[in-house]
Length: 475
Image (cartoon, rainbow, N blue to C red):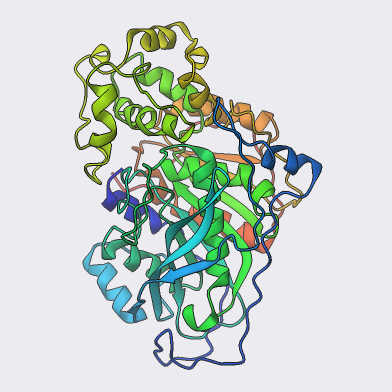
C-alpha cells in the first residue's frame, strides 16, 4: 500500500460524537494555557488476573528466548516531543480541497500535530517508539475521545512510518482532530521517526510488538501535559481503525488490549481489508505468484528475526536469504528491490514450497510457527471475552481485492465469529483493495459513533454477499 493510499485511509475515521465549541479564536498549542488544568492519565495495568498473567508471564512463542511483559508504571511515558505543526480549520478545509480529498464533517477546530517519542517494551525490554498525535487547539467541551489509527504497509525500517512520511500524515491527522478527537497514529516498532535507530527491522505483520507499541502510544497521548496537547484533556476511551496491515494490527489490538492495557476503555474496532488468516494467505502466496507474494517475502524476511531466527536459509533460496534484509532496509517503498518473481523457486526454498502445496506449511520449523502464530484464527493466544454489550468489530472487505484474498478471509471471518469474536461483516461490491474503506465511509462512521455511544452490538457470523456500499462511485 502506497503512502498516498494509506493517507486516504486516514480520512475514513472522521466523525466524532456531538461536540460543542467553547470559543472561536485561533490558538496555538501554548496559547491560553490554564495552569490549573490537570488531566488524569490512568496508571498502566498490564495483566493482573490469572488469565492475563498466563500470557504476560510467558508470551514467547516459536522457540523465542523466554521473557515476560513488564508492568512498569512508566509504560507510555513521553520521552521527547517534536515541534507542533499548527493548522487553522479553514486552512485545513481549503488544503484538503486542493488535494481532492473531502471529509464528511468539515474541519471545525484549529489543530496541531506533533511527533511523540514514548516508552514502550519489546520482548521484555524497555524501548522507545514514535507516534504522531494530533489534537484540537481551540477549546472543545469535555474530554476528547481517542481515535487510534493503524496504517498500512509503508516500509520496514526506521523513517518509514507515519512521522517519517512528510507533511501528509500530519495534515490528515490534524484534519481528523479538527472534528474533535485526539488522533494517535503510531509508527510501529522498527519504523521510528525521530532519527534514532531502533536497532532491528520492523517485524512486519507480527501481532504482539505492533499491538503493544500501539497501546503504549495511546497511553503516551494521555500522558502529554495539557499545554502539550492543546490545553485539552483526553479520555481513556478509544476506538481503533486500521486498514490492510493496519487492519491486521487492529485485530491484534482487540486480541491483546484485555491483557496489556486493562486500564483503557476500548469501545470498538474497524478493520478494513485485514489479512486475518496469515497461514492461509501465505499458503496461497507460496503456491502461485500473486500480488501477496511480495508481502510474503517481506513478512518472512522480517518476522522470523523477531523470534530469534538468525538464518533465512530455510525459507529463501540464495542469494535472497543473505540479501533480503538489506533490500528491505534500503527504501520506504515496500516494492523496491522485491518486484514480482518469475518463478517461486527463484526466491523460496523447495521444501517451503512443497509444504505449502501439501497443506503442511505450519509444520515447517521455525517458519510455520511464525506464520501460524500471527494469524488470528491460528494463534495460540486466546481471546478474552468482551464484557461490554456495545463492544464490537466491523470487518470491511473488497469483492475484487487483488492483495488480501477475500474468499480466504470470508472463511476466516466465519471461523473467528463462531469462536466468539464479536464481528459484523461488510463487503463492498466491485471494490479493489484500497477502495472499500472510502466506499464504506458512512457505514464505518456510523459503527464508530454507535460504539462510543454505547449502542448494543449484535454479531453476525455469516459473511454476507457483497453489497453496494454507500460511497460507491456512480457508474
